[in-house]
Length: 144
Image (cartoon, rainbow, N blue to C red; front, side):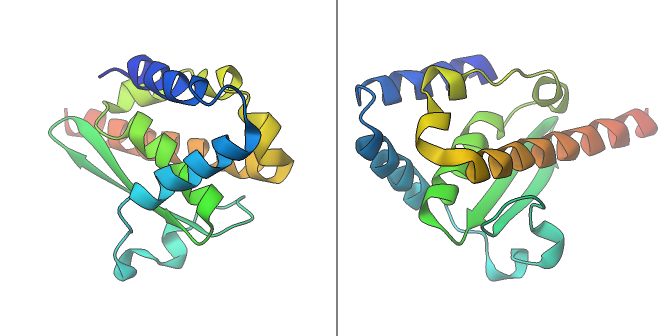
């Protein structure tokens, strides 16, 4: 699936909740619970996303042209948020991640139910994922 298709799938899922803020938060936390935890050895200072109020650990691997992310958080809502990004970006090519435009947040009115602090942290997560993609793309260019 493309990044746009995954976002559209997320928009459809949240639209079923009819804008019910409480239900959206519960669903977001459920999504976080389904995210596989990062092994303890991955929960290092180097893997913490800077700019998040909660602790968010993020790792990336490059395999056969695609980037794969693993993430975890110490809070349920933030883990739900990072699970959405892992779902969107994992298994995508570095250049697709770098060129992506995330539109799902506005479509599901995410800012209405996550607040300013989490919005800043969410932006930091996106930035970190794009930095990983840029690093993999740069490594590829150097090998060519």
